[in-house]
Amino acid sequence: MGEFINLADVPKVKIYTGEEIPGVGMGTFGSDRFGSEEVSNAVAGAIRCGYQMFDCAACYGNEKEIGEVFKTAFDEGVVERKDLYITTKVWNDMHERVEESCRKSIADLQCDYIDLFFIHWPFPNYHAPGCDGDARNPESKPFSVEEFMNTYRQCEDLVKKGLIRHIGISNMTIPKMEAVLPLMEIMPVACELEMHVSFQQQELFDYLKAHNIAPIGYMPLGSPQRPERDIFPDDVADLEMPEMKKIAKAHGVHPALIALKWAQQRGQIPIPFSVKERNYVSNLKCLTEDPLTEEEMAEIATLEKNNRLVKGQVFLWEGAKDWHDLWDEDGVIVTL
Ligand SMILES: NC(=O)c1ccc[n+]([C@@H]2O[C@H](COP(=O)([O-])OP(=O)(O)OC[C@H]3O[C@@H](n4cnc5c(N)ncnc54)[C@H](OP(=O)(O)O)[C@@H]3O)[C@@H](O)[C@H]2O)c1
Image (tube, rainbow, N blue to C red):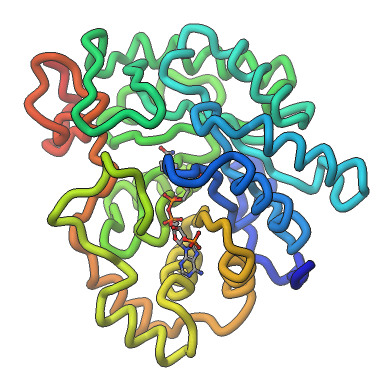
């Protein structure tokens, strides 16, 4: 067994309820490359080294195996349930049956309740896990406020029933939030979105901060092993940028750790994924020591390249122009 990181040193983030949640989590999406056993073994090691937040999802197909790991950790007294912050997400084909999805995740994860429950995507457009980039579902539709709120209301009911503690939204845009936030009874505590050095989403980041919604940055390392469907010739590799390598050299660490320090110091919660103990330990440890200087933070802020990696083309509906339609880039919700 490897190193245990002192929890008191791991950064925390205060959400609008006043509660402090972990300032870093571990991703659990195997990217169609890493099997359930590999991912759950990493979760087992990560609990023992001090990770408290785990970013799960029904569609990652590994909640049963991760649940076995949680149960063992609870049974062996490695950690108590209350010390973990377990997140999961309802997948697009379950927007009408949110409670069923949530109960299945709770059963699979063997965790009694979910700390933070996300609507994974803001529309019910389904694609099969592991599909290729050309896959399209003829039933896909553009975003609808009514449909989204129907799903969101079910999440609010789950809070009232005690099945989940907090609600999260994911893959949202400012126009979509402008339309739905005023309709909510229980505000979301967090929004999960793609955020990394070459895709900083400054406007959306500022919007979330202004609305007391904690930004959780997915693909914080630029996801070097993302699924084939999300790889395009013009994509930028964050960890290969000369500036990142230079700053990494000055700190004597891998550029991945610079990306995580930047994310945490900027004010987002990074959720890096790794199945390698050496990497997931250093991903947590790096946030407890040797911060970046103001100059380094400022230099990394200049590395924005509008490099969206999850374009989401597999969610497009008939009549949509291209993947840009998913992201409301002109400031209005794209319908048809
Ligand atoms: N809400 C959403 O729609 C959504 C979408 C995508 C992802 N996510 C979540 O975000 C999490 C993270 O995204 P991601 O897994 O795509 O990408 P990521 O965390 O940016 O990158 C993971 C990759 O970085 C490598 N890596 C990790 N630590 C490293 C280190 N210290 N040094 C060198 N390489 C390192 C890993 O390889 P090794 O295994 O070889 O270390 C792995 O291939 C996912 O697991 C998932 O939980 C959510």
